[in-house]
Amino acid sequence: MKASRKIRSIALTGVGIATALSFSVAPAEANTSISAQLQMYKTATVSGANVQVKLPMSRYDAQGYINNGARIEVTCYGDDEYFDNQLFPTRVFNGTKPTTPTLLNYLWADDAGVHLFAAIEFPIGAEFNEDVFPDNGDEIYCKARWIDGDGASISAFTNVAKGTF
Ligand SMILES: [Ca+2]
Ligand SMILES: [Ca+2]
Ligand SMILES: [Ca+2]
Image 1 (spheres, rainbow, N blue to C red):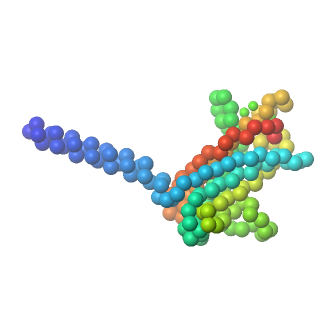
Image 2: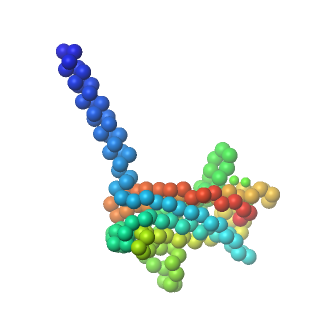
Image 3: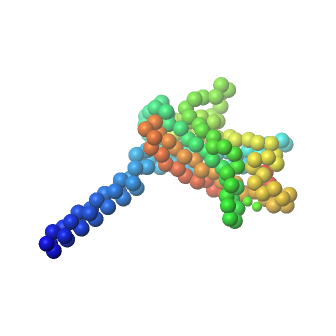
């Protein structure tokens, strides 16, 4: 009796470990890692975010993912002490090239993997002006979430970019 109870508890523990493992391993089905960098810029009229996302893998795999419907969601936030508000609705980028020839705003592949150079602009003083008091600078960061054609996802946050946007 005592022995069988012990075995049962070991078996249950085993199930617990298996479940925990499958949870932590699932996002890695994208079979790669992701990194994201933010650089804010300003022209005479606009404040913009350059979000560079990279997923290292072979060119063959990268093109395969893109051809099979992979996408990257970019969501930007205002960094604040108590609550980081989302600045505008999430932007979604996929392998569809914009009509003008540029490397911006779509997923492309090379020998280093998948790349996205997202350029997101708003008028100065609009969405990127996350701290509205004139003497209060803005602190922006973004999250990049990769979702492959099978729905597996992996995400990364950028650095925080500071300025008056
Ligand atoms: Ca802030
Ligand atoms: Ca501000
Ligand atoms: Ca601030």
